[in-house]
Length: 427
Image (cartoon, rainbow, N blue to C red; front, top):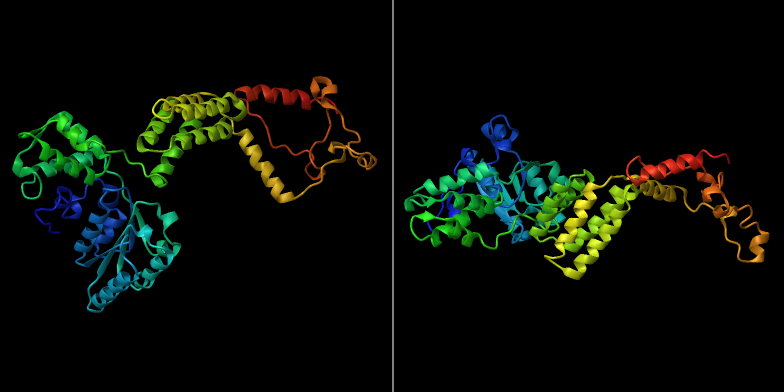
């Protein structure tokens, strides 16, 4: 894999062999499925799914080189039907000549269904080893037919150990990296580079190259690195997997009564550019879904937080969201209203338009009274504890059905005790 000397540092430092791939040992260590198929010289079609800078393109190139196959590349951003047909014709000619082709499709999720289907015959008969790269969840973005013919491998964002390895390699390599400059980094500069990379090898090496150009002398300090990485944001793909994963983490941290984790994920989302009002709406939902009547104040706090943010905006209003998230994570939890509502709506769909019992119907006219509307109705406030024991409020077909069974947590414990007492009264 040769690279022009004037190419960016991130391009020059691309791994030249499978052994140089950093941070993907779960795929490439001996004994792993992908490693075994490459060792046997039998590469299969695959989808490489992972965040930017995790090595998807590099891995595809290395697969082709490892098995001495022709490497063809298409970008779903720029390729159309003409380019697809040309690539398939070239691959077919090579296949007839006895040489395999690794067809790499970057941003494969951007191809529509018809374009994805165009690859299927060539993947099916082995004309190409199809390697698609995507930052989006293949389950949602790719056709089932294509997924059934390609194995999905999930690449991980690089951890600090892998990033540090790449950093040292770039500083030491005199031919491709910065080794000829004998550049030294302070501990603070090194830590800042690794933190700013946020799991992205390309971001790390690009920041290092910029910082090296800004450095005054042979030592790279934290101030110079800070200038080089200014404006960088943590990984957060609005509307993509990172978005939904972090939303899920926030919701589940609150549900799991972990205010520290809830505040962390809230900070991550706001830092990444998530719409704060979306978070506010989510907290309102959480209040009813996961706390409910165990502490009804949670809904009030969430509503007040949303109102406070609308009045203040960021960053002042962010604290109101933090207030709500921490409160919700700290109070008793109950999903009994949520499950009761699900059961009730399912019965509405299943049973259709059941009649309202006659004693519950309103009777504003004489004719309706003659028809029996309202006959036998007992006014609850005239009964002991405002409870008319034995009265049926459900349609006849659902008599006796119970959806809401309060938990023994928070305020619901008292609600449950009241129900047990009232339901024990004779009809």
